[in-house]
Length: 135
Image (cartoon, rainbow, N blue to C red; front, side, top):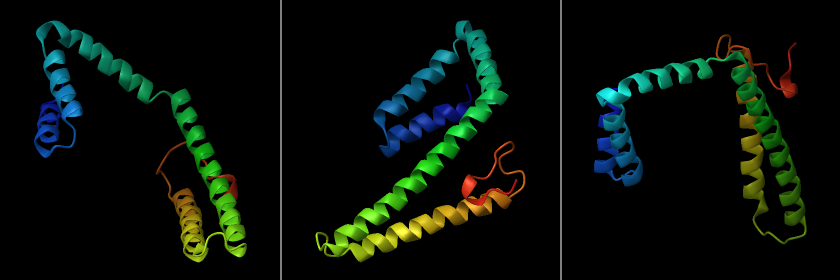
């Protein structure tokens, strides 16, 4: 393991970010740096590197990210409809602020998707969502 992992563990402990995660990082550093565990760590690192760059895993990550994006857009649109109905029925008194926020968030998501789709080389193999598909 890298020395930066050990330093990160100590920073977590000192800053109070997380005593548990900090101790775990420090424990892993010392465990994997023992001479009898170095070969196993090397094999583990190589296996993780292969899995990280595996084409099937990349496609699955891309597809799940796309589904999360689309479902998020659907939930935002549904929320806008629900809050506008609740505002018209005067169940929620200040629904305008919520609608403004949700509308701005929806526009932000759509603009970011469009900007990302036009950026070459940002994420190889990914396609823009169906909202702005340019195939």
